[in-house]
Length: 70
Image 1 (cartoon, rainbow, N blue to C red):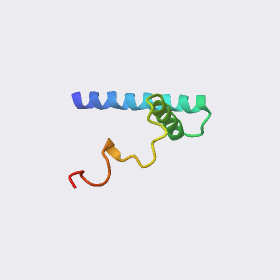
Image 2 (image 1 turned 90 degrees about the horizontal axis):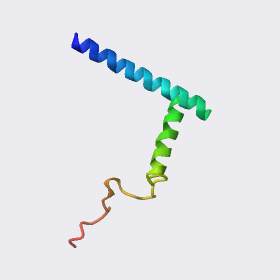
Image 3 (image 1 turned 120 degrees about the horizontal axis):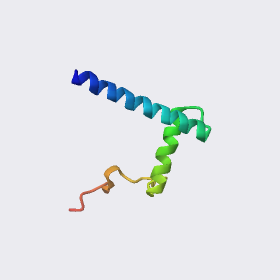
């Protein structure tokens, strides 16, 4: 019974998230939820100074190339 209850809670949460994305898409006047989600992610990244991404910046913040022991 706990598994069923847990699954129902998960489904309710997902439905709430989909409804929130639908409302955001309507508010932002974009045709799809995925566009609304992309816009929200970019806006959050801008607020944190992460957007637009720097060109050529390697993932993880590490320098590309030699080890420096040369």
